[in-house]
Image (cartoon, rainbow, N blue to C red; front, side, top):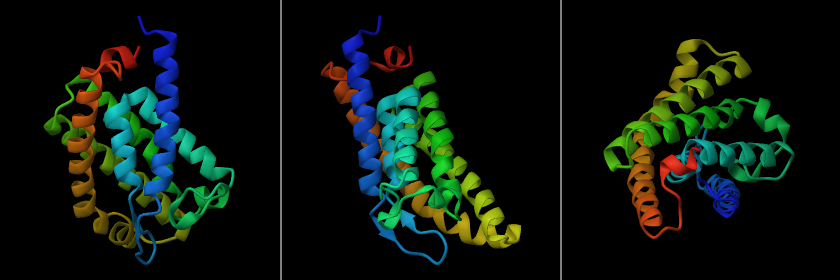
Length: 189
C-alpha cells in the first residue's frame, strides 16, 4: 500500500520538478519562431523519474505557474498570453507527453532503451501539438508550420530524449534501490 508520507514525498518531488522545468526553460537557443529550450529535457526527466501520474502533475503545475504570470517559461516569460500564443502548444503538449512517457515506462521497464522509446514518443507528441498550435496561431501553411515548428527540433529532440532516458532511468533506479522513491507500480497506485 502506498503510504501517506510516500504520497506527500511524491507531491513534493512533483513541485520540485515543476521548478526544474522552469529553470531549464531558461536554457535557450533562439530561433525565429520557436526557441530550443531545456524544457523538454526537464519534462522527460520528470516523467522518467516520477512516472505518469506525478510527472504529469509536475508539468501541469509548471504550466499553471507560468499561466498566472510567474516568469517560468522560456526567456523569463509568463502569463496566459504565452499559453495562447504561437509557442503555447508546446507547453500544452508537455502534458500528454509526460503522461505517455511515464506510462510507457511503468508498463514496460525503467531501462535506457525503453526510456529512449518513451521519451522519443513524448517528444513527437510535444512537437506535433506544438506544430498544429503554431500553424493556427500564426496562420501559417502546414508546410511552413512543419518547417518552422517540427523539423528543426527532431535531432536536438532525440539528443534530449536520450539524455532524459539515460539520466532519468539511472536516477530512478538508484532512488528506488535506496528506498528514496517508491517503485513504479507503487507510484501509479
